[in-house]
Every structure is written in structure tokens, then in C-alpha cells.
Image (cartoon, rainbow, N blue to C red):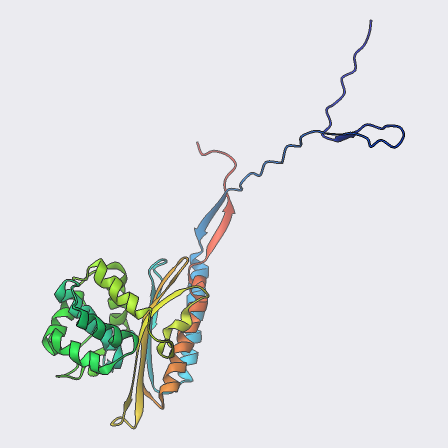
Length: 304
């Protein structure tokens, strides 16, 4: 009885030997690529590590501020994680200077349902992107100065903001907490601002000219988008010091950060800018540390 041998199938390339100068034919056998299996991972918030990271950040900012001159208050809110940090964020007797120009535009848009004339749009563009004071004067008077601005602040929920007296919009006082409320309304809606109104304001804040793009922009990572407005003015009657402020939105992958830093009694504009950027840089660099996660593999057994 003839026996047949069954050989295992090998995934190889077979070469048949030949004689003379002829090349051996090559016979290829298809090779199946290995299948990659995705690994199942579960992520849980690490609350303890988050508390430790927050305490460390707040301590480091406090040390930094302690070594800087003047009065300094700040607040920050990340709309993605819900993380908040701040110090003195409800102090509301610091002037905004040119920071009030966003308020003027938002109040005007909320009254006009976004329908700005060509001349008004030109004034608004110069007021925000160039910080043009004459344009701010013109639009402040159209809003109704104190009365119209007060009504806008009530409607949008800025309880810690008071419009400047008479024609002096730069004397508007506010708090970091109210600056963040305003930014949140611009991002999420509220206060009678339509989606088109909000796009107009934030779009202009993203186009602030380069020499005025300092401040809370220091919180940005590479590729983040920044929309901000800064304010700066000498205070000759307060020991020849300066008030310097910056607030804005820093957005990117996994982040929607709203930041406001206000200073006064600064020895100069540059000192105020350095202080603001130092605080913003600390917050931006360490924000992710405040909501850490623990990663674990998925259970192998199904849950009964």
C-alpha cells in the first residue's frame, strides 16, 4: 500500500535550481500580514494628583506675583475641563483702559442686532485691531455712554463692571471674573449677542496688530488661536504709575482657555506686560496638569 506524506505548508519563496546559465524561476507564495489588535484602555480622573498640581501652580504664581511690583489680580477658566484658577479675581476697582473697547463693540452689536453700517464697521475694526481712541470715542457716544453701557452690563451679567464717567470709557472699572464672564458670553452666547455678533467681536480680537498682541497670548501653545484685547495707560495722579491689563481666549486641541490679568501701580508699561505674560505662561504651560488621568487596561472578563 502506497503511503502519502502530508507536509506542512510553509510560507516561503521557492527557488527551482537550473543548469547552465539560465536563471532559476522564482515562485512567490502570498504572505498574509499580521493583524493588529487595538488595545482597550480605560481612563479615570486622578483627582488627588490634580489637587496637588493645582496647589503647586497656585503657590508658584503667588511666589512670582510676590516678587513683582504693584497690584496684580488674575483669573482663568478652561471651558473644556472646567478648571478655574485665580487670585483676587473679584477685585473690581481696577480700570480697564483700552480693554473697555470690546465692551463698547459688544454693547453696540447687541442693540443693533449685528447690523452695523459701513462707517460703524470701519470704526469698530480700528477700535479693536489698532486700539484707536478716536474710534472708541465715536462708538461710545452711539451706545449711550454710561446709560447704555450700564444696561448692557446688567443684561450680560457683569455685576462687577462699572462704565467710566461721562466720555471717559477708559475709566471703566472691572474684575478678572467679569472679564471671563464677558469672554464666555462671546464664546458660548448670552446677553443678547447673536452668533454673528460674537463672530464679529472675536474675529477682530484675533486680528489685533502684532505690536499689541502681547499679554495673555503667552498662555498659547504652538498652533493655538488667540483672541485678546489689552489696555495700558499712565496714571500721573497715582505716583506716575501705569495700569496694564490683558484678557482673551486661547483655543486649540483639548483647550478653550479664558484668561484675564489686571495690574495697576506699575512702574512702567513694560513691567506690567512682563508680569501679565509671566502669569499667563505659567497657567498655559501647566493647565493640563490640573486634570490628570489614570490609564488602565480594560477588564478581560465580561461583567455579569
